[in-house]
Length: 304
Ligand SMILES: NCc1[nH]cc(CCC(=O)O)c1CC(=O)O
Image (cartoon, rainbow, N blue to C red; front, top):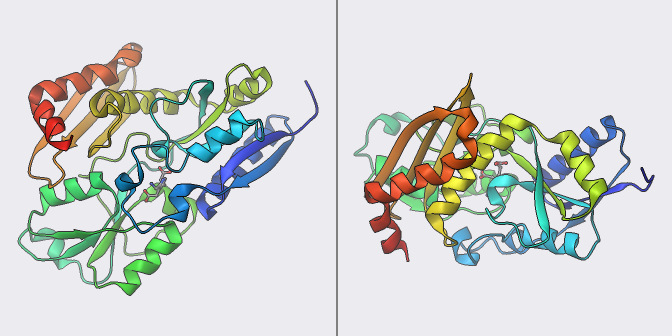
C-alpha cells in the first residue's frame, strides 16, 4: 500500500465538514492516512431559491464529482440523500456509513396546540417539495414558505420569521448536537430516500480508494439506501418529485414505506410492503412500479 494520504473531498458547510472528519477518523482507525479537501458548491452559494429550481439533482454534489474527475481528491463524502441516484460515468458509490436517525423533525417556534387541529391556519418553513407536499396532505389549510440554507441558517430564519415552525432532518441536527429541546418527531412523515446516510464515492478504477471505502461500508445501510434510492430512481426518471421512502431490516425481512404526492399535497399514493431481504436488489424498482400503477403515473404526468 502506498503511504500517500487519502484525499477526502467535502463541501465546506459545518455539517459536511463534520461528516468528512467522521470519515477521516474511521479511515485512520482502519490504518489509512488522510487529508481533507473542502470545496464550495452551487447549492450552498445560492440559498434564495427552493432546491428544485436550481436544477434537478446534484446541485450540492457536482463539485465533488468534478474534484474526483480532476484527480484533486481520492474519495468524496456526501449526504447520500443529496446525491443523484445515477452517479456520473466513471464515479462509483462505494461506501454507506451507519445510518443516523432517518426521520424529520418539526421545530416549533412556540405553542404547538395547533398540531392536533387540522383546521388551524399556520405557516411552516421548508425548502423541500417532499416535506411541503406531505405537510399539506396532512394539513390542507396550512401555508408553507421557502426555507433554505445550512442547519445554522435555518434555525436563525425560524427566529426571524413569523412561522409556527420549520421542518428539518433529525440527522443533521443530531450530528451538529443542535436538536432543539422542543423538537417534535414527525413519525408520520416519510423521509427522503437515504436520509441520514453518509455515502462515499471514488473514481472507477482507483483500487486503493475502493479498498478504503470497502472497509467503511455498512451492509444494512447499503441495502436500505439502495432499495430507497432505486424506488426514487424508477419513479422520478430524472426530474424531481415529492417522493419519500424508508426501508428497515428486521431478521430476514425488509419492511418498506414509499410515497408519491402531487406538489399541492392533494393527491397521494403510499404503499407499505415487506419482502425477503435476499431480494433487495429488485425491490426498489418493483415497489416504484406498484406506485405507478396505483395512480402514480397521473401524479408524475402532472409534475412534468
Ligand atoms: N438537503 C439538505 C440536507 N442534506 C442532508 C441533510 C442532513 C440529513 C441527512 O444527512 O440526510 C440536510 C438537512 C435537512 O434536510 O434538514
